[in-house]
Image (cartoon, rainbow, N blue to C red; front, top):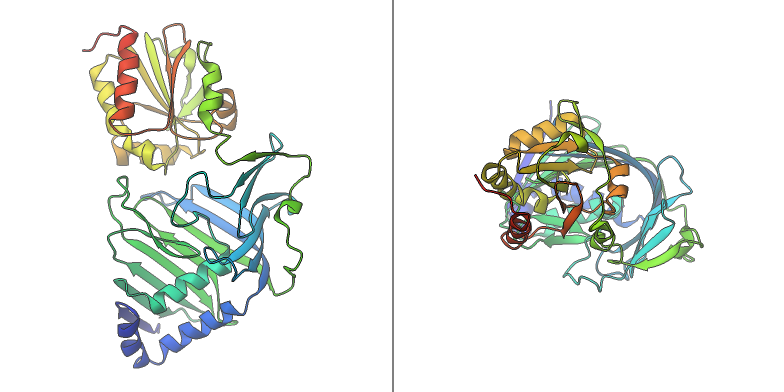
Length: 403
């Protein structure tokens, strides 16, 4: 039979209840102590993400990670490099306590972010596995936040479930960070689950659930304290001939603007039912194309405006297409259509169309095409009311008639 324990509230209440319940606080401290002994680690990570309502993971990714404890960094508290899960010599992302580096191997460029372009009270980094789980457990033991923790004995593992009932979402960018109120988040509840092996009293899997999305990481083949960080140089992990660019230089509007006054690249894509749709199939006088991503907050916030356009203009006057470029499958498109009440066409995109429209993979980006499919306007990003007005004014300049 599973042993199940619940404790509620912050550190003091947790102490009082758990001390009377077979020393579970002591066990969590033991796990935390084991995590704090890890100075370095190498391992594979299986990462998965879901959208609320989906039963199958939308993203499955395998990476190889080298992680180092870095107490001198008071933000994240770790240094790390992530590599391709198949070609473990190909570094794709890294952080050294001062900068983060992102490799774009297709264009042989390395983007460096020193966190000064867009200053925040935290560094929005997905922490490496052992740093991540260590901070979650430490938070559960010490926080005064309104939390509920359930600890279950799963025979070979301990399963820990932490529900955070605060007015803001809580993310772990190193330490726990209360995020600013998000207008695209309808429920701020944050849920974290950890699976701890009884064999070594270390976590091997963690799941994070928000109202906006769900993610899970599983650590495999971990080798602990086997590599030295004495000569760690982040840039040495990347090809020397890659061009260095500062964070923000890859902003998609710089690329998308090159399409202005030019014929829009043709495409043939599939809708949620698998039906092929081509740009040439759409015969409207004007066409608004949105490059979007399931899981993108501003993209979701734009849906009411796009739905309104669909009802205000006839299909003959204004075509409206959203292209999902985060490569979700058909079932995910249909789930998104149903959940968000989308009244316009949503198609599954490809890497090729993102390159042809030069978005750099960023979303949302809007392209307004005239009857000859010449790109007349490009709108980068979405701000409610401001972008609505800009797009509507541009449509009206094409002399379309509202119904």
